[in-house]
Image 1 (cartoon, rainbow, N blue to C red):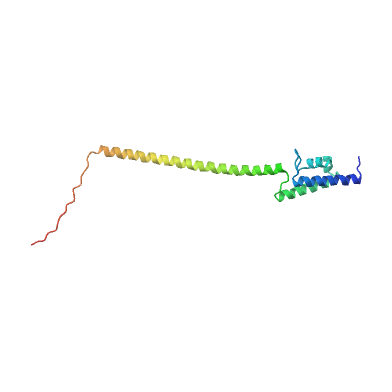
Image 2 (image 1 turned 90 degrees about the vertical axis):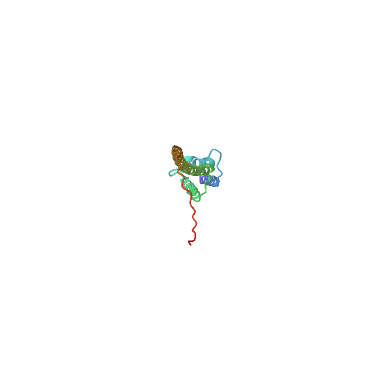
Length: 153
């Protein structure tokens, strides 16, 4: 079925209005910022946006505008923005987890080394005590003599 020029213009106006709404972030419930939702919102068959169909140029325009927004850091689809935000958060959390695991490994190694040193020092103290107990002889050093230098007559 052929459509008149007036119907085609009316359809294009509806498509452009729906395109503007979607790109502003006014996404209908259950929809996305994509051609399927654009076709549904403008009440035009989705196949009319592909190949050499009458509204293929509007699909290209929609995709370029969407890419331009995404390139500028704006994401009109709140779900896509949330997905991007969550992916970034997951990456940061993975980095923190890796850092924490590394710190835990370093601290565990330090604790093991400290315990080994304490055990070695304890063994040395025990050995020194036993060795001191075995030697009953204590040698006293002679007391220091004080001599006075007298005058000769």
